[in-house]
Length: 419
Image 1 (tube, rainbow, N blue to C red):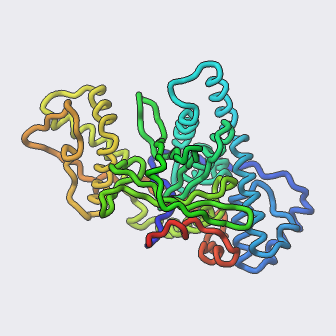
Image 2: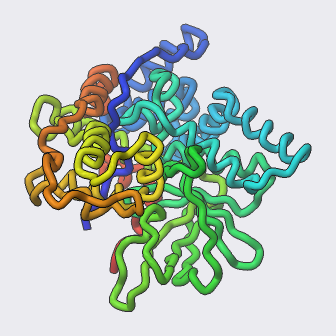
Image 3: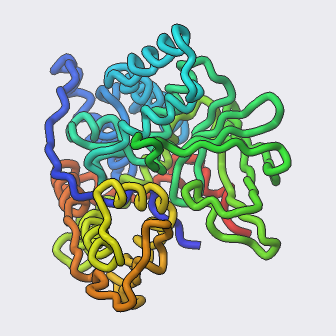
């Protein structure tokens, strides 16, 4: 099965870039290390330059350059985790999580502390998306960037551990990242900081507890001699679309496969490298029809006007808000249908076929159904890709499959493939 890239949908926000501060390094040592790196064989040089520019916050030293391929990958994985931890602190997220803990001690809130952390990261995930939202080094350059699922899950993993929760793991599913917290009774608390919804006019993430009877096919996996993860299937009896459980199997169950990394891994180096290896594809698409995506935001604005125009009685702004909050899931389905119409696969959908509310009574004659083909979005993600490839030429040569084989990278996807 072809793998889906782990990346967010593009949005309409304007990108503002800012260069990160260069690390302070002795100029002689820096020149020596750079010369040594340039003399490396091509595959190692691409791997090392990519790691240095995107995964680490300091130059790779001579001792590291002398390591054999697999040992090199292990060391860079460890240093990447350290970079994620430093960013969690330096970005201010650690302080904000600590404030949550202090407030909870002073006065217990209705929302559990772990969900408070989840919702804080969910709000932080908002911003410019595309390719600039997935790593600390990119977010330092693009100050208005949000967080994609890999970045958001890494930060939530760190946040939950800071709050004292145990059994926290970063988790891979097809095309997405989430977080698990293993509970002593055998349950799993599931968190998704980038699957967003609105509750009481506040942006929140997704959380759900899976009981032991909903957890099947658990298989322990030895990632290397010091790290262990596990593959598992979570199964429920009803659809839960925001949680990603949307397709029933032959037994009528909604099941999804997951891979939970070793607890020490906040974001796996292999996932980061695979995402980076896909940037060049978008850079090549800039200027083609594919680089003009469907604009969900513009369509949703038109949707509100359509509903007002075709309802039998007048709707206030508050009514429109209530309809939107009641139909979070159905609006997602409508957007998916609209995107298919944008690509010419189906006719424009009638929004009243999706929306449900006691405030809605459609007129007999429906007029001006929004045509998704007229809502063309920004090429920002593709422009970001071109800019990054020009700034970091190694991206044009980075091939994940080659790097995986040469450096012995562990790949969680190998453990959630369909049989």
